Amino acid sequence: MTIRIGDVAPDFTAETTEGKINFHEWIGDQWAILFSHPKDFTPVCTTELGYMARLKPEFDKRNTKIMGLSVDPVSDHNAWAKDIEETQGSAVNYPMIGDADLTVAKLYDMIHPNASGGQRSAADNATVRSVFIVGPDKKVKAMLVYPMSSGRNFDEVLRLLDSIQLNAKHTVATPVNWKPGEDVIIPTSVSDEDAKKKYPQGFKTLKPYLRVVSQPK
Image (cartoon, rainbow, N blue to C red):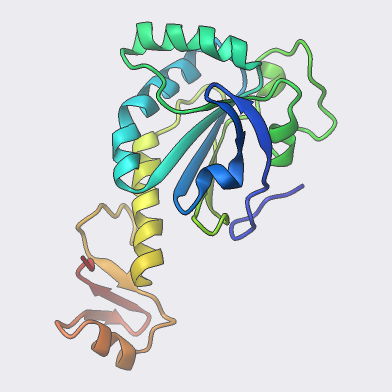
């Protein structure tokens, strides 16, 4: 199953470190980040899980839940969590899915559909290094895929979430390297006439297709 931006995020029920969870029910009317890992007790992912624990208050402010996944049983996750807290200084404070049979990994097209569970190495699961941003409408808003050797930039995931949520609320786009508080772009789908009504304070037209305005509050 190939997943594209705009598709409904596949629903599933899975065991997690916080009990059995149905994904769509768990999201409720909030946003969600689902990020996956190739195996427990792997070095790069250990740093990522600890950093996400520290970032959780920022996601909370944005009405966004976070959930991790690793293709190992929940019992291993609980043991790994102790290492994460010891080495990263932060305890995992969000659910971690146990996906030993690769059900969710396959559902989200993170691994070859013919892959089987059992004793697998991190290299076998190399493609299970994905991030999905899901909206309250349960649709996929963004996806990121990283190689095993590169730690993901979760500050960028936070920035991307800010951009997507801003667009959802105000129908604006964000330019290259945008940061919250900086000017945004008026999409071409908005006419000049409508833009003047929406932004009575005015906007700057660099080209007919490139109009910038202060970020809406």
